[in-house]
Amino acid sequence: MLSVTSIHAGDAYNVIPSEVVLKGTVRTLSETNRDKIESRVQAIATSVAKVFGAEAEIEYRRGYPPTVDHPVQARILGDAAVRVAGDAGVQRDNAPIMAAEDFSYMLKARPGAFVFIGNGMTASLHHPEYDFNDNALPIGFALWVDLVTRE
Image (tube, rainbow, N blue to C red):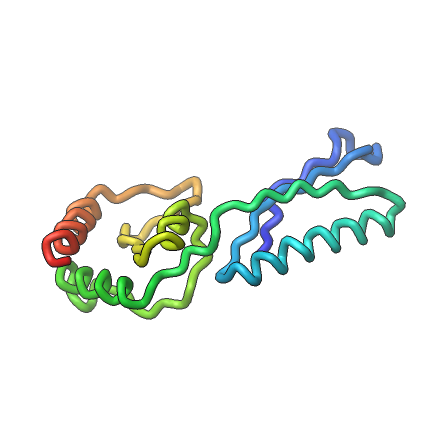
């Protein structure tokens, strides 16, 4: 998924800017798709600029690789979560999400799984109205204690 999250093209509404800067992020579920998107961004930006008699300069910085759980470790983590929060408090087999996490480097080096600990009904994590629920902390602590003492 490509998200253009910033566009800057001058400061006057009635003047054609000499430069336009687009910024954004790319998130994928596989390295193959990550490579494809990088290639397509290069090709499309160059082609669009050419149509308008301009040039495109692409500075593409790869961020975190896809965060992909290992099945055995995901099962172990899910079992621990059920012991801590009960069946009703655990969601398993969710559709993959495009979390951009430095933990993805760990998952490339060692088997593991990434976990989200519920925070109640609040705005999403990157939303300006997000409010962390401190009552979620004991559940997170209990999950890690369970994992450490059983595995």
